[in-house]
Amino acid sequence: MNPRILLSVPHMGGNEQAYVNEAFATNWLSTVGPNISAFEAEFERHIGMPSVALSSGTAAMHLGLRLLGVGPEDEVFCPTLTFVATANPILYLGAKPVFLDSERTSWNLDPELLRTALRQRAAENRLPKAVIVVHLYGQPADMDPILEACANYGIPVLEDAAEGLGSTYKGKPVGTHSGLAAYSFNGNKIITTTGGGMLAGCNGEWMNRARFWATQARDNAVWYEHSQMGYNYRMSNVLAGIGRGQLEVLETRVRQRRAIAFRYRDAFADLDGISFMPQSPHGIHTNWLSCFLIDEARFGRSRDTLIAALDVVGIESRPVWKPMHLQPLYQKTECFGGKVAEDLFRRGICLPSSSSLTGDDQMRVIDAVRNTARAADMEGSRQ
Ligand SMILES: Cc1ncc(COP(=O)(O)O)c(C=O)c1O
Image 1 (cartoon, protein in one colour):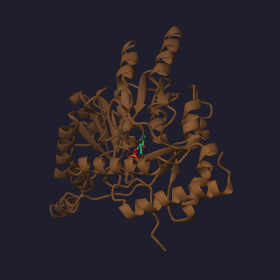
Image 2 (cartoon, rainbow, N blue to C red):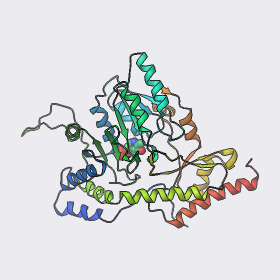
Image 3 (cartoon, rainbow, N blue to C red):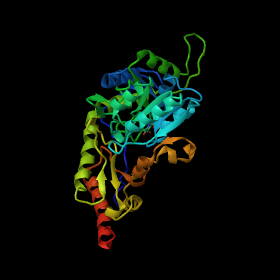
Image 4 (cartoon, rainbow, N blue to C red):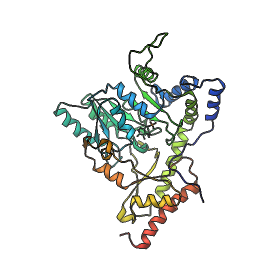
């Protein structure tokens, strides 16, 4: 029996262990230490903005929203098609999310719909405190019209680049366009620290404030003095060592993920009813996950049947994110539009995309998808 092929697994570059060993050898086994400072400095060099290493991408979203002044009863606009960790930090701050649909061309926040929603809110004199943009699956969102729409009303933007590290928009890394962004190093991401995140922002003073909040907001005193509420959100020096090694191979990982996605695309080019996630004309889509849409009538099988067929032969695949406005947690939350996200959720599938996926294993996935389509053909269930 072949081992199960998973969706997205960690892929070490080689130097991680040395940085981790150094942490042990020097006894920096804490949330302070040289790996943390070096990882932040190296990330800052990569992204071009001061950066704060945190325990998760979710923590980075939380601190980012707090920096933007989001508080109780404020509204925050948020794409509905995303992972729940984009929206939950809005609730942490006692604020209210308002969801917005995606555009078909990028699957990300629809700039036209955003413009309409902001115009409507401005007429009612209740503009949101902030807007969140997500770079879904490594696809850069169309930032220029989004930022322009928000600038009209002076509304700040937080980029959720948890899935977008390595992506660019108009030649610059995603996250740098709004000047405030959250990244994730969760175990399934393009690079990982097992768990961890980074908040990066062009305002260095803000990043110092985020670092202060992330370390329990300890005031400058000999005793433990606190004038603000903080969190235990710092990254460990051991995990920062993993991050340093991983950052060294980020470019390679982007190339590998993209090669996997395009190999799938080419292998399915002659199949009816399976279409590749659009690729932004504005930048580099990392294809952190390789995503496709299944048209049941033409493919002959539903998306869920395909997921089940892959599972039987030991291949993990997943539906595209279930939109937030369909989640029981958010069922009473307002949503502008939603039909595009619903359709992408109903028909979207994420295929195994690990940068370490071997050619043979990818062929197993390709064969399994093609066999499912062929079985449908033989039954004559395709139209
Ligand atoms: C879009 C998105 N936002 C936020 C997060 C949260 O990141 P973390 O898991 O590091 O908290 C993730 C991933 O997990 C994500 O996919």
